Image 1: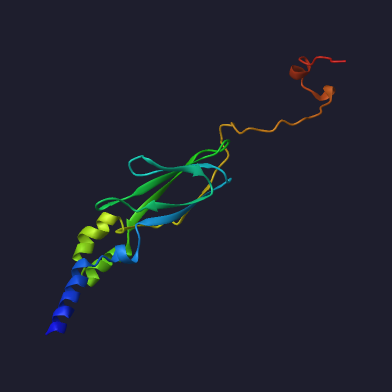
Image 2: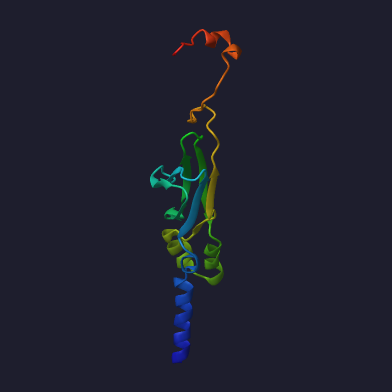
Length: 167
């Protein structure tokens, strides 16, 4: 009789207190952020426009997958580098497969409360963000000065008339 009671209590506890995604998975996910060229300034903002990270590439950081009770987080990764066009890359969270394990195992509390509250209900599916920055089309790329030697007889008249003899 005592064993039956203990077995019944154990089954009830496993059924009611189970939350698959919180136990098996996580709510913070690692993301590697890189750029070509390296050393670009990277700013990451969340769905509300709040900056959650600012630094230079490459970097490894962790981002939360939940933004509140039953709300998934989304991010915008913004890259800037002098002489290159800036670039924005979106990061989205999706429902974690382990969350559906609550239905199979019977964890109603995990399905309706624990996993949605901890953010483990969602998963950040992009483990790496790699931006290939393009040269800025506006021509604002800083160029190193170069020396060119030209023959005065081959110069156009518009340039030759502005020359000044220095010896």
